[in-house]
Picture 1 (cartoon, rainbow, N blue to C red):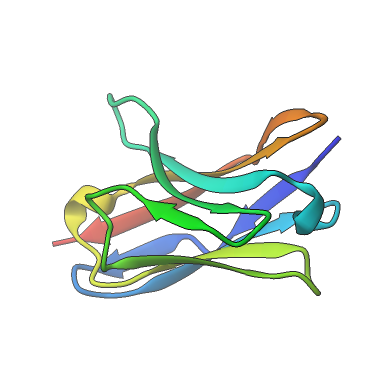
Picture 2 (picture 1 turned 30 degrees about the horizontal axis):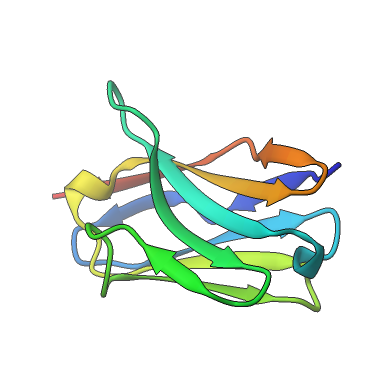
Length: 115
């Protein structure tokens, strides 16, 4: 089983930055992939970025060049650096772990970008 706790959301002006954190209850290297998703009001949840246990990263086209996913194995934490934020980035951001034990979600953290 994997427990995930997100933090770092908040209110920021357009053009600003935030760093989200996803702390896992076990070694992140034992998890096949950790991803960030987001869900805006009235919209479906969408994949934002993924980092695999081997370190491969992937991004949604809408965030490429602006968001960066990274990790710190000593803290069992995955980060999502959000730069040049736009109002359309406003959403609840969720951390997801895809592992041998199953698929797990965090509780989400709200990101609000004002224009």
